[in-house]
Amino acid sequence: MTEDLTYEGFADEYAKHAVGSPWNSLYDRPAVMGLAGDVAGLRVLDAGCGPGLYAEALIRAGAQVMGCDQSPALVSRARERTAGAADLRVHDLSEPLTWVPDDSVDLVVCALTLHYIDDRVALLREFRRVLAPGGAVVLSTHHPTSDWLRLGGSYFTERVVTESLHPERDWQVRFWHRSLTAMCAEFREAGFLISELLEPRPVEEMAQRDADAYARLSTAPAFIAFRLTPRLSGASH
Image 1 (cartoon, helix red, strand yellow):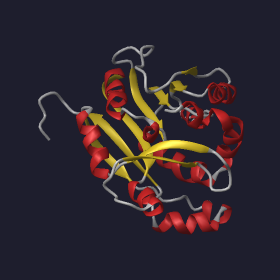
Image 2 (cartoon, helix red, strand yellow; image 1 turned 90 degrees about the vertical axis):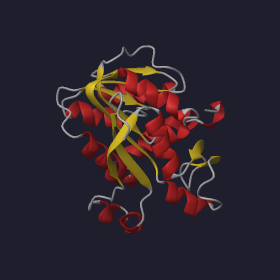
Image 3 (cartoon, rainbow, N blue to C red; image 1 turned 120 degrees about the vertical axis):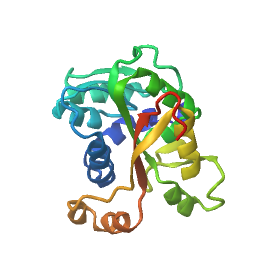
């Protein structure tokens, strides 16, 4: 990730925004937590923890949480939010998770983060390494058709995009557009199978909070979420 195109420059603003943003609180978080299922007693790695909203939800659901984010400011906000109940640290996900032992995590949650990573297969392989037997990865990312309809050009061309995270703020970020076929190929290359794919719909509360966003997201997905499980050695499909 390019240093001046990360969340660090607007971390405080984003942390406040994400708490009540319908796109976060009423769209992505319910989808990710739904795919995570019952996490009580599970050891969970929140990879790309941001300001700690998913970590907080996981802790409330009974999980033992560790997590990381590249932004020191966001990690600080996450620590405040979780009040010491999670082991959170600054870490760039483009680097190996050297501080997480093999087979030590029951669930990896990676919400709206994977599209920022250049070598996604390497990161996914790290997730596979740290997963205990029977573990899973739950991740969300941009829906490729949503990006394509907004950006134009060829749907199938993998490319880096730089734009503002919010239409009314100068929150510049750098991310990858890739097709659904490319996403699935990366999962397979890293040794995962898709056990569930979800194109989320907004919860009903969004209709009162943001009617325009509710109408849009009820008819066309902005994000896509997956539950991945390690492919067994020797499995061909």
